[in-house]
Length: 142
Image (cartoon, rainbow, N blue to C red; front, side):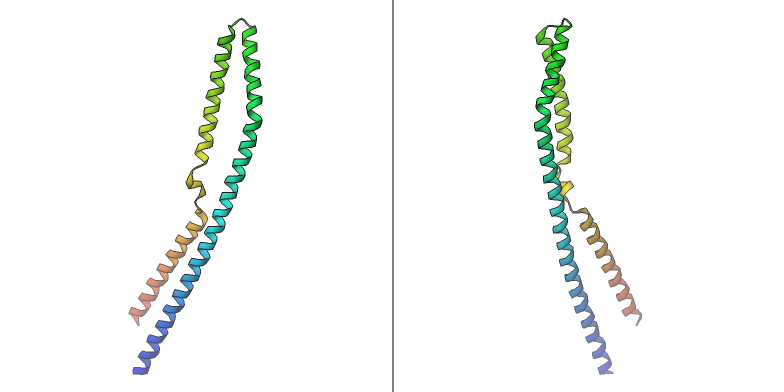
């Protein structure tokens, strides 16, 4: 009988060691996936910022010329030059603010969070908890 208990306890120790090894391996894999996802998201943000900067560099002179043309047309219709410039200058400021606010909302830290990896990590943790509960229930029944 003593041998039966020793085999049982050593197999439990072996199972616990295997579970610990698998859990640490899973954690390393999940950390590696998180790093890869963060790199991917950072590359997306960097690329997006570069494209946005190029777009702004091209939009500013074009938008300025359009505003000046509109102000010139308003002046030609009989409105004083300073008022026509003020009207279209204000319109440019309002449109610029709207775009700036929309762009700022996309540069939040939450957009960099490795959501896929975190979701997978939570699912793995739930599976591990369920397996531990099942294993505990089997031991109690035996």
